[in-house]
Structures are given as structure tokens and as C-alpha cells.
Length: 313
Image (cartoon, rainbow, N blue to C red; front, side):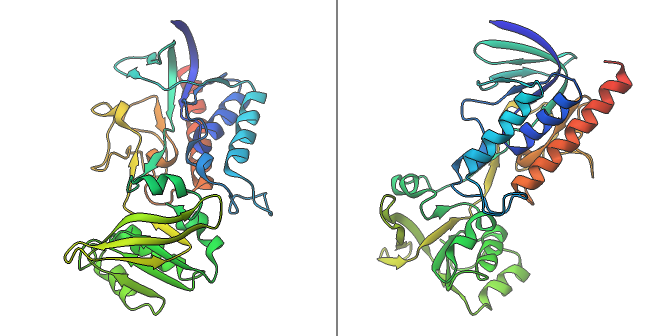
């Protein structure tokens, strides 16, 4: 077991974690970053990012995260490519443990992100990023004048469907019930929109298409009441059945909402425990964008730096 002490430790290596690493390392705090076994966060599963400033032609998600990683390393951040298995925040310095490392730190920035919930059927995994997505604001632009589907029935699904009407020729909202769970105002907007059609009482049993050819070409739908199946021709499918914040490590230790998102002070990134900050999608269920995650990573780093300075650490 390798042991070391750092003034700042960062858990997570998406835009929030790596931005925090850039800022804290430039402040000469020599942070350590547990980047995890799947480094880079959700953007590493996004083939093309066109809405991150400074890349007018777009940039691949993995390439963007590699550039952020290189920038953090350039200023002296130390990266550990392991997952944190356990934490002890009962006293300072805090303790973080992976299978090979035990790190103590004076300040902790949590940037563990969130994972989109998917249907978990084999064809979905095959066609993810080849027509199957969980982010309309990330990928909707690619489906201009093409038919798409949104899977879900809550406010997120309604928002995604309405957003996609800007680009798609038609949006089919696939919902397993016969009425939307979305708020009344959102439901009314969806049901009243000329470009949106409803597939009620329906579930997706299979995604159709070939990732090596044309990508997604359709969905196989099953009516939960009649058992009948039909194929729906679409070029894009957006799964909007929710996200799960990656915060299990901090259950019972830090204040969370009912969904598991870490609670932070309004307008800040400080959590319920002094010396601990949270940035990115593990605390943000509203925006969930790379640029906002990076912004809160900057905020957490600045707050941690000032707190350490005040403490004389």
C-alpha cells in the first residue's frame, strides 16, 4: 500500500475534476486526482462535442478529456488511475483508499459525476453513440431533419422531446404508461406540439441497426397492454429515464437530496462537511453540461484554495 499526504485530493476526472486539478495545481497546491479506472467521465463515451467553447469545428469527447488531463499534469497534478474504494471523513486529514493507495488530504473535492440510466438491453450497448444517446442537448444537432425517439415520460423526457423538435423532422415519445409523469405544463407542451407523436403503453425491446453501417435505423416496440410489437423507424434514440449520481461512497456522511445528489451551499460548491467541496454532475441534476461542470470545478478549486489559506494549511 502506497501512502501519501496532499493538501488537496480530487475524486473524479471529468471536466469538473480536471478543471479543479488545473486550478489547484496552478495555485501550487500539488493535488492528487483519483481519475478512476474509466478516466475522463461521461465525455469519453461521446464521439463528437460541438458545444464546448474554443472548438468551432467540434472535438471528440475522448480527445477533449485527454487535453484537460495533459493540462492538469503540466501544472503538477498527480493522477492515480484507480477507483476510490473507501473514505474516512470523520476527521481531518481525510483518508481515501484505493486497492494500492492510501491518501490523506486536508481538503477534498468530489467530482464523481453521474451515470445516465439506460434500458440495459444488448442492442443498446452495441448502438450507444451510433444513434443511441442519453443527452439531447449534446447530440440533437446531429439529427437535423431526421426522425428520432425519446424514451421516458417524466419532465426530463418532455424537455428532451421539446428540444429535439428544433432539429428533428419528427419526435416520437415512447412511454410505458398511458399518461405522462411530467408536470402538467410540460405534458401540455408535448401533447400540443405538432412535431411530437406519442407511443403510449410501449417499451423498447430492441434497437435496430448496425454500428458499422448506418447506425441506428429503428426501435422495436412492444405494447405492454396488448403484447403486440411493431418497428418504429428512427435515426436517433434518446434515453431519458434519469441519471444516478455516483455518490454511494458518501452515503450517510454528506447531505444529499432524495436522488443522491450532493447538497451544496447556494451559489457555492461547499458541502455539508467543512473541507469538502463538490463539483459537476454529482451535485448538478439541472444543467449536466461539460462547460457547467468545468465551471463548478473552478469554483470548488478557488473555494478550497481560499479555505486552506485561511486555515494556514
